[in-house]
Image (cartoon, rainbow, N blue to C red; front, side, top):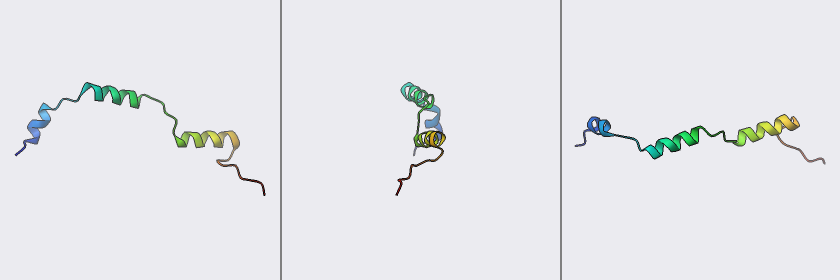
Length: 52
């Protein structure tokens, strides 16, 4: 059987993974919520309605 405690003691994360995590978490990415907030701030409403 696998001794999980012993395997965890041997575990060493890959440096590439740690570097990738840092690059991902340190980026300020614009998501859809940010875009919607910018539209509301600019126009005062999230969507433009068509005139009938």
